[in-house]
Length: 634
Image 1: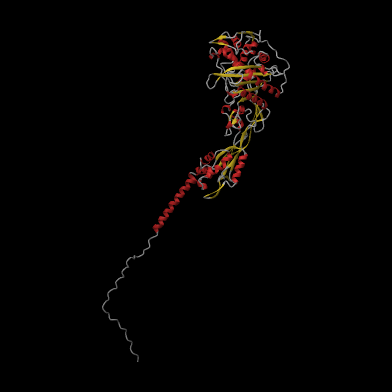
Image 2: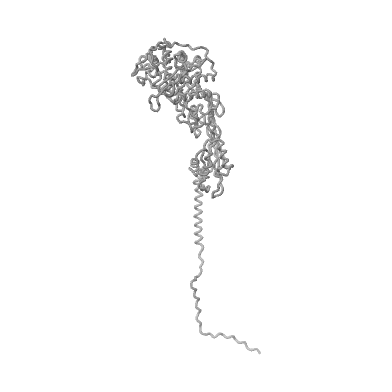
């Protein structure tokens, strides 16, 4: 029998228990809460946006707004412009012999920015480089260092100009040697890395001081600094070219851009000068200046027929190859730049006026007293004498000042009229105006209009005082007489040869009739008496086998420092052969202080020496007849 299932007991509810108390938090601990990331992301995003905005604005400025300016600045730093100097034309004598020519040379350059302390890590990199270069370049270390440090940011500076190839060879050896290699903070480096060469040219004068007064010189910039080098600089210099190349680190980038405009060479200039005659003239005048202890002297040799200058010599001179040791006072051309009173050589123009005006003939009798009172003084000759009874020819032969004054007074009824006539002839002979050579610094001399002459000048001008000229003007006067009374403007240039090789002769010089052929012939015969007659003042100018016409001159000299008369100017002018004139020679010596100061004594021998050489050089045949020997006295 199945026992009945017992029902589960229900729990008897007891009294209610109190609720459990919550746990107390521990001291020092707080609940961890995660913040929202969104504010941080917004801040970072804003910062990135601002940075990108700055970059964007900068890129727009560089690439759009200032693009051209930055590109130009980059090109300046990247591309180096180099001038390609044109080869200077040569200057030759009439026979094609070089008087001035051009040889290869180099400008030595450097990049100063490669020697800065920041670039090399050395404080004295420029000084060390200067110590290496100075002995080779021939200058003080300080000067070379100054060029390397004057503009540290520069990529180009010229250290020395027109250096011979040997200098560059020595620099190249230094660059390859151990001395140029040093160690800086950034490692090993070569102090001479930025030192390079640029092909240029150097002007040289193969004959040293020969014709230096004519040629002049070229300055450090390659431009004519004096003489024909300056006067003809445009033709001689040609036209420079240009070369632009890309560089990096002071070196040309082989594959970089390269632009080049070729230079146009200068023209060659052929002078009228004969080198051999120039040498003879220069040697003769230099020797006489030394012997006379004179300030200076000059000789001009001219072709009597064509007006071409065959020689123009000055003493003392200078060597244009060595200007550093040249006397500054000798750098010019005194034969064209000195203005001085000619003295008695001027009398030939007075006689020309007297003969041309028909107021006298070579045989006209002139009574010459020992003194001649005129204006405010009594005029005298160079020696005291009893009254001379001379012909007009004798007045010239004896070089009488008094006789010349008496002859010039016949040119007009009054001293004023006589002066005006004489002035017109002096102008026609070329006085008081440029010679036409256009030479730098040339003086036209001083010849005041006759109306401005003082009372004494009316009597001193006829015998060569109270006016001034230069040596070429004086030679031209005698060439005019030798040329039959026709003046030919002097010339120094025969022609030029351009870069294309074409020779262009110089234009024919203008000719001007001054006196008639008859007057010129009479004057020539009178000038022969000066040299040939035993009483003449120019007997030391005789040349065996040749008839010589000439005139001595001895004048008071104006000292250029004080403006007062001090010392003398001795001179001699003439031409030969007198029967068939070919060559004119003029010599003047300023302030001789040793021995004689008379023109016939110290310039006559110079004339004789130079004229003899010129006649032989030009192969001029001797005279075929004797001199006319006009009467000197009556």
